[in-house]
Image 1 (cartoon, rainbow, N blue to C red):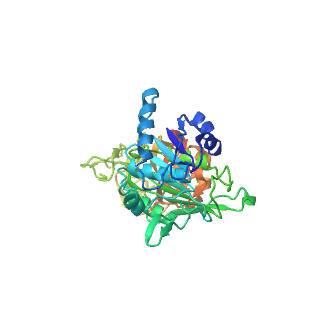
Image 2 (cartoon, rainbow, N blue to C red):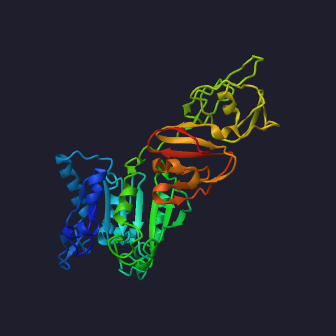
Image 3 (cartoon, rainbow, N blue to C red):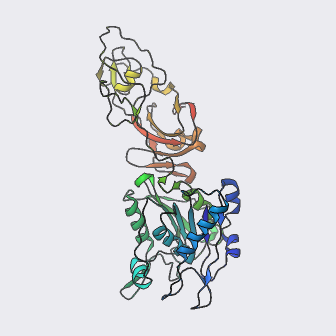
Length: 420
């Protein structure tokens, strides 16, 4: 279920045409909810954050909607999301802060987050207190001059009121323990006449695989991209593609599988492995040396070559063991055949896999993964650099021979050869 909150002075029956989640909900299978904000007596317009002092707090209104709809519909309580525009964005932040036990992830467009001083000292709501790893997306415009949505934030004298975009991403990336530095890329300027461009910033590798994303609209104003202002992105599609990755525990299916030998008595025991791949080998007194591949056996994708007693170079000791070669010396053999690794096809299981890149030369990730691009969710190297095809982002650059990569796929892929 995804909440959609209109801006201040706005109405739900108008906002549904601005961010129109209906076609996305029809295909993705979620409930799009458009609540209506109450009229603030101090001003006479619809508002989510009524002017202080007030005892009006729409956190309870949203909680009541969740409870009421749950009686009539089969709602996944672990996958309730929120997004909003302008003042509706401020409410989305409040839900992320104060109804965090029910909101799995949220997004804010053209609206800022209340500073703890404003939230606590002015409204008496207490500080922001999220309780679980929380995916968060913001889409701010750099020339937005509305007081509650400026990119630089807003203070009144020495009183901080609204946080800056950088302050918001610092807060949520720190809370989620993501990488300190974001991965930054430029979104394709597909609408050059809209007067603005978009920079995508991703803070990855947070707790339970949670990430933070900012779509910074350079020269963007107080708009909903895709409906008004910037047309390089469709904010509604971006929001669903982002929040739908998460539940209350973090990223859905967040589990890094490290396949290798898990038998402590084996010569090639790997204490970091959490799934046995059948590669364990033990003392072998046989004088016979010939390759006899073990069906279904895979080894850790690390290039640490050994020369087998059969005169063939294997990528590591586990690779040799998968071929029943238990006697070897460190390093490559003096004679290397015509890159036998390039002819090997492997099975990629649905979810996370670890693969080794042993093609004859380094290859750009876009080319290496072209054949299965529509099935890849994410691929990462050991330094956290990522390839995200759904976002047209290639932070890996070239895949390097001898290095291992984590790859997450949406379905099983058989007979995959990365070198073809």
